[in-house]
Length: 273
Image (cartoon, rainbow, N blue to C red; front, side):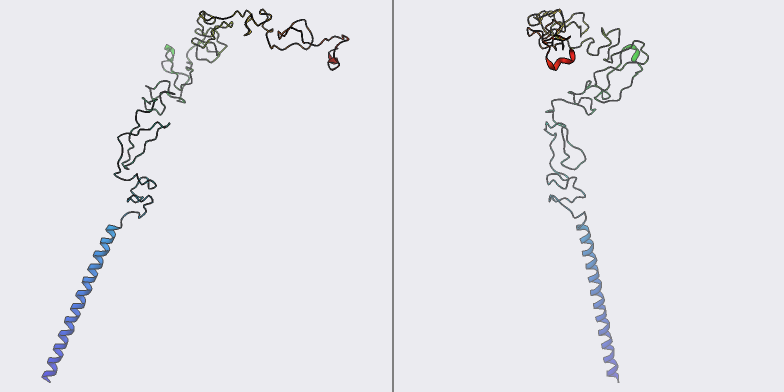
């Protein structure tokens, strides 16, 4: 009886020790699984998408289609390009693109987005092609109105009582012909006299130019104009339908039809008879 009880106690101790070993192994396995799981999470952060294969996933790569663009990529101090408009690229994904090189022949000194070749005042960012322009400026009545939109026309002040009838930007007291927008101070004037003082300098044409006389101002000098006193007569001028005794086109003949019932009038011109 005593031996039987001792045997039972030994068996019970063995079972307890085995259970402890299994519990310990299970705990260790669980801990290892947690450690591996946590380690896996730490190693697998990011989108997992690296389209350009540069080692940086799309969630941190500012251009995942270009393998030369990624965080920390080499970036030049400036972009040497003469493209128009010039394009600078942020290579290292720091949010700042390098400046454009000085190879841009037309700089934008005032930073308004318009280069000096089109900006009529590249020192003022408020002045550029298409800029808002008002008809009246606070200082307009002192003669300092400004062409803000670079259209070549200075706005006319509402407070100015002197009109600009032809809208060429020059008021009537400065414009020698305020009904012709091609005539104003500084306008381009042909070198030879044409009967119009386009530049309002009091001189028709350039006195230093060697020009032939064109008294009727039809654009044909006396050397080729068969009647330099009639502006309707010049080489190639249209002739009248009926003969009028005048050679308008300077071909040596009066090319008009004989009208008014004359016997030799052509049949197709019978309506003139």
